[in-house]
Structure formats: structure tokens, C-alpha cells
Image 1 (cartoon, rainbow, N blue to C red):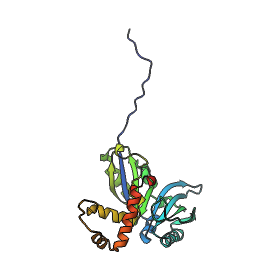
Image 2: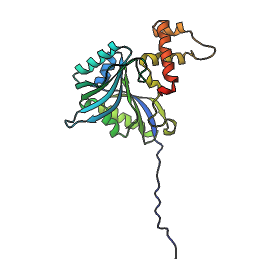
Image 3: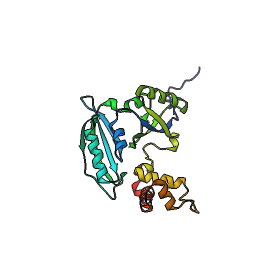
Image 4: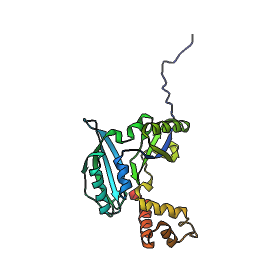
Length: 244
């Protein structure tokens, strides 16, 4: 007589999956239009459907100056693509850990078809961290359980459905990029990131240094003082563990 164990073993199958950062443009988006028209940016934290089937999103708007931030908030409030804009806090400066020298929290109400979020989810892309919107592009950190061979087809389907422009700016395995850990470059303003990335590309931080501050400033079209200020603030945000 054979013996059969009565214990049921549950096997957990682990799919490696893929982590991506997607750069997305799509039509009729107030955030894309606003960050293209005004030198400001957005962090998209959460978005929820209302009983009226609109979407209310929680955002951090940021800019280099208070005037730029005021201009951006006014653009959002006056956009035909938004229903309402509610400010949750006053502008802050100096030691704020958020990107930008000046920040403000907003609730914005808009129609769901003016977002690409639902389409991404329906094709298996799971939103992992705050979306950054700058210069008319959305930067989406997402996870997809399928392997990389499936990603291309899914992205192409989204492009067809939404008339979106989508490119991949970063790709990694889950083990190499823990969920919920933001890229510290996201803490920089657009100008700080541009200056820092150019400095790295030109071996400014190499020894011996391959480029001078004057050459970097000329390439960026700014003064030497402005360049050094951008680099100083970028380095402080990237190196200070309290701002991680």
C-alpha cells in the first residue's frame, strides 16, 4: 500500500518582470501643456475617480522662482482641460527636500481621458513611484510582470490606442531597482539636472578635469556664476543623505 502525504504544498511562482522608466507624450494633457509653456515641473502623487467620474489628482508643482510657479498654477487653473485647481499649501523655498527652489501642492480635477494612466494599467504596466512631468514629457516609473520581449508589443498597442509618443529611458531587473526607491536625479530642477548631467558627460568631475566651468557655462548658455550655483545645489541634493 503506498502512502500519500496529505500536506498540500503551495508553490509560489516568481516572475522576474521588468522595471522601466517611460518617457511619454500624449494629446490633451494639461500637465504636459503647462510644463511645455512654463519653466516648471510636476510630481504626480495620486489620482482618484470622483462620483462624477472625473479624476482628482494630487500634485507637487515646482519651479526655480515664485513667479514661474505662479504662472504655472495660473495656466493649470485657466486650462480648458481642467475643471478645478485647489492649492493645498503656500510656496516654500530654501531647505525644502522637494525638487525646485519653490514648490506648491495642488489638487487638480480633470477628465480621465486626458490621462494615460488607465491605458498603462490595462496593458499590465504598474505605476511604482511619483510621475515626473517636465518640458512637455511625462516620466513614468513602472513595473511589468512580463519579460522584455513582451514590452515592445504592449507599448506599441498603447501608442496606437492613445496616439502617444513613448520611449524607454531606463530599463532594469526588479532586483536592480527596488520598488519605491526614487532616482535621486528626480530631486533636481530641470536646470540643475541639465547642468549636472552635462558636467558628468564632459568629465567635469574627473581627475584631471577635462572641461572648465567657463566651457560648461558657454555650452549651457549661462554665466559661470549661474552654472556653479546649479552644480552646487545639485550636488547638495544628490549627496545629502537626509534628502534621500
